[in-house]
Image (cartoon, rainbow, N blue to C red; front, side, top):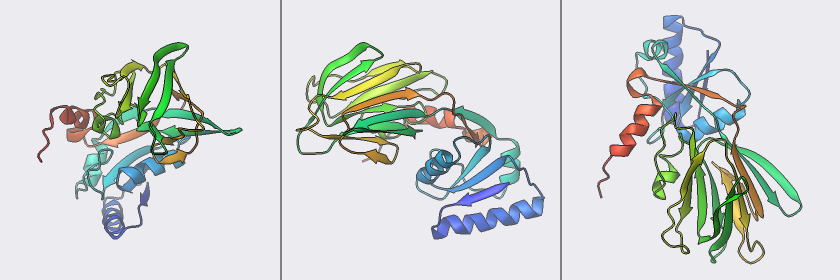
Length: 251
């Protein structure tokens, strides 16, 4: 069993406690990686191990920790009884200048304006137009796992993990002002073109990896990659998504 932690004081303290628990219980499963940190650190760890067949059990030391579990002294029993969820990331291919770059996104791909001027975008699903011209601050393409993150903040739909769908949601749409986005199947190939990349530059961001001055972005689900996440039986990822659907915010 491997323990990986973020470098902040809280994460290192929890890592030390987990080591004591594992040594006491004498549980040494080689196929499990315990990840101590927040959601961002979990995303980084998954991407570094994208071709691994390991099981990832997250222990939260951050804020909300949507992808993580709560630290408990019953850690070993929780792992033994945990439920596995498999998710596939989005693959983003960005064309900029005379180059191209591929990145994966577990939560979402964000297309964001770089200047004071709104972006002018066209969006296709395969060869069919989703929208011919979107004037906005950008657009966001989200997986079901990421649908309660940035996607929800821009009023995108919450998707069940087994929905086999992805969400396309505008960010501050100006024209058409009332376009709320679209839900498409996970076999879709989404093609986003910047209609005026010289005057109205945009960046493409896969979770936290940014490519600036994007001319064209192709997004699809990369089903050849599977991330196997372990969750405590009482609070698995699907239940967390369902709770977000009924959560009421206080101001």
